[in-house]
Image 1 (cartoon, rainbow, N blue to C red):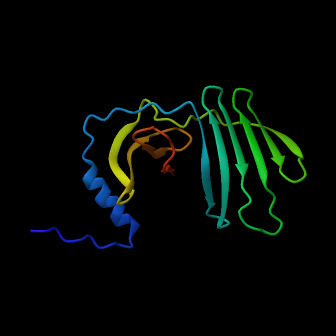
Image 2: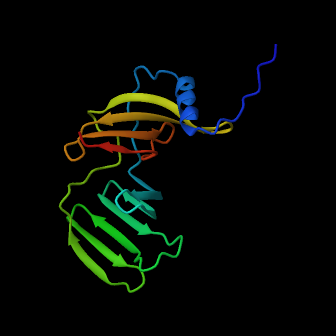
Image 3: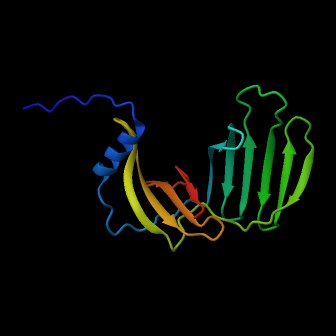
Amino acid sequence: MALPVPVPVPVPVLVLVLGGLLAGDGAGAEPCQAPGQWEGRTVFYRHGTGRITRAAVSYDGHNQRLRILEERKALIPCKKFFEYILLYKDAMMFQVEQVTKLCSKIALTEPWDPYDIPANSTYEDQYYIGGPGDQIMVQEWSDRKPARKYTAQTFHLRTCLFPIMPLWYTI
């Protein structure tokens, strides 16, 4: 007897739930070691303004440095685009306006918070993200950091890259 052909479901949440069921329970999961240096892209959504900012990110965990370069993807009137260079060991940030090259030096008051799975983290779940033929296996870990109160972070299982999807809650 042939199995029925799956019908595409337009609800992404359902795909993630089914992926979680297929991935197994991950009993005895151990945190992976996140890479010390990587480059990628990120998207920030600001709830207060409804604005989306896309940026290229360079991460150097060994030297506690972060570079964020805002990308110009659309014409937004009066919007300035910046490059941010955060040097946590020196407790300073450089903010460079991309058009005028005007640079501001700003003191960093927050401590370095590496993109990794902290030692006190709790394994939450393991599941697939994506669709048929284009999936990645991820693990979700949670912790309680004083600055954020509660964090759930999703890491790519094979490469341990973070963040696939971070969630920060203040309780």
